Length: 153
Image 1 (cartoon, rainbow, N blue to C red):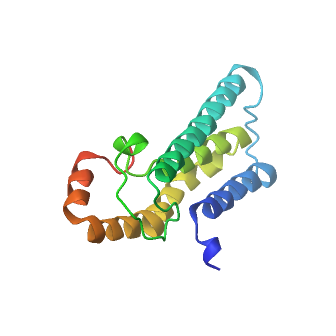
Image 2: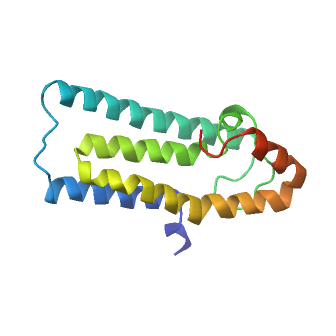
């Protein structure tokens, strides 16, 4: 069951909820046509694409530094380079951008409420435990990094 407790599975679950809301409980707003639809289509594409790029940049940097990608794993080193100079959690930020983009793409307005819940799950389930492990393992390096680099943006 440990394979279920990873962020991509949570992201998939939240995306499925948004899709179901759009499919079975539409508000009838139908933003799919006209100028608003074109704008939302463009914005959703930018968000989805931006999320994918952030995730790929972070995965590439973690691989380059030869440390774990698994959120429950023990890191071999503190990665502060690449995209991790800008955000301590670029993969989770990418996940949030993906979810928001999918919600817009699905025209699932009610599901916008899922985004703060998703952020809360990520923080409680993954970010805080990861930060505690990093704090214990890298002590002063972590303290400097935490002060210099924001959690999200």
